[in-house]
Image (cartoon, rainbow, N blue to C red; front, side, top):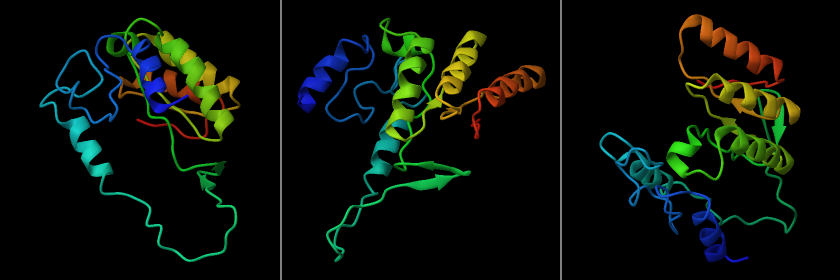
Length: 173
């Protein structure tokens, strides 16, 4: 499968807002709502992409030809690579009808766990989304990071209790 094949397949899954661009930099989808790019001034995704371009690995090292170890520990958990899947919410709204939030998390969380990394899961106004995300994390042995929006105290603590029961070691807000 080529990268072009991946992009072509992604276009069948991502609905009318995400264009599955060859370079995901927020320029095609910026300032669209709904849409994955960026709302408000329409520059958040563009600025994030540009900031990432300043970071790279400097490969001018001299060392023995041996296997590279990319593992690292984070809050007592060891991961295979310092890359996580970011939280995505309102999947239907922003990316089309192929998957809802629950289906997306049921694919993403175990795939990331199998790859030795973690998925951040999204939150939303539908309480079933967070409940299902916590269940997906629990089914993956707690290998996921639930993201909780800043709700009122009772809602927040209910969601944190669900996240804790999933076995997650870390929560995000």
